[in-house]
Image (cartoon, rainbow, N blue to C red; front, top):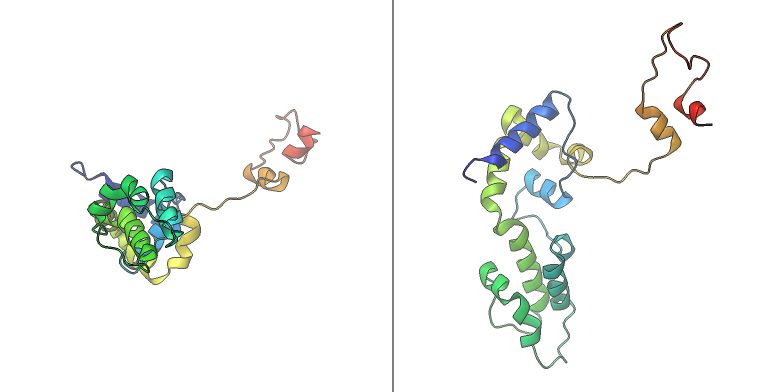
Length: 181
């Protein structure tokens, strides 16, 4: 945070997008939703937490049944996290799901709020954040990762064929897939 890396990252992303360059394609849909609206209105599922240990403990909390007699075993591993998130309190039978969701939301947005705000400031460069707010679906393929399967046609379209008359050894071949046969 001292060197303001998140601001410069946002500014770099904005500049790249405006000038027709590639988008980052590494953001989660949750981050894109929070950027285009607000973190408070963004729902964070327990499955969105990248730390597998914390995710597993919160999933246990989501599936907790009242017939379990010892809740200390359930809360001990994540007690510090829940204290930091402000969700460590006396729990009623219906509160387990709510506490797991609030803790997940804090884990994604609460502990990283300063970095998130600096990223937003950087994305305001060239009014990219305003465009993201107005047209969030248009930015999904640019900002978020999508898994595309690699096919022979996709691979062939990656390369641009430039045949120089009389200077190529492969002038009789029409595509890169002809070379592989």
